[in-house]
Length: 119
Image 1 (spheres, rainbow, N blue to C red):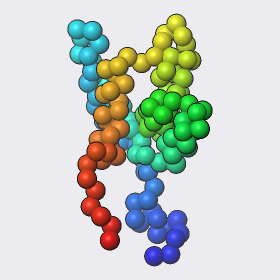
Image 2: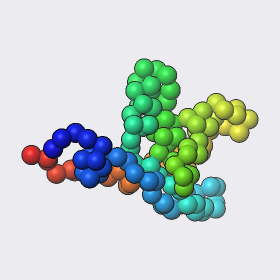
Image 3: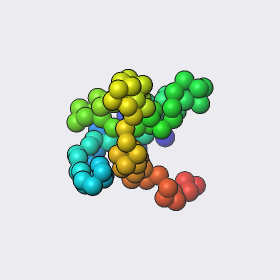
């Protein structure tokens, strides 16, 4: 295969449009459900991961910010929104919502599942 935009597109090597998903989490005694759009891991998540490794951010907040987007693919959060640094009075996302988002990001990207070898 020649490495071209067309051949990469045919092989599914681009992250594509975000996927519409539903998440549910507990907020105190109340169970909440929301529609989210999740972008597959992409260039944006790789940049965020590298920045976190350099000590320039939080890897989990960066992953959520890179993957949770609106229907057009624009980020919903900044990493600072997630950690609470953007608004200390509001604070960080709660643990249950954070876990629900991470689980859905993992599901969209088949994280934690054994991949067949590409031999």
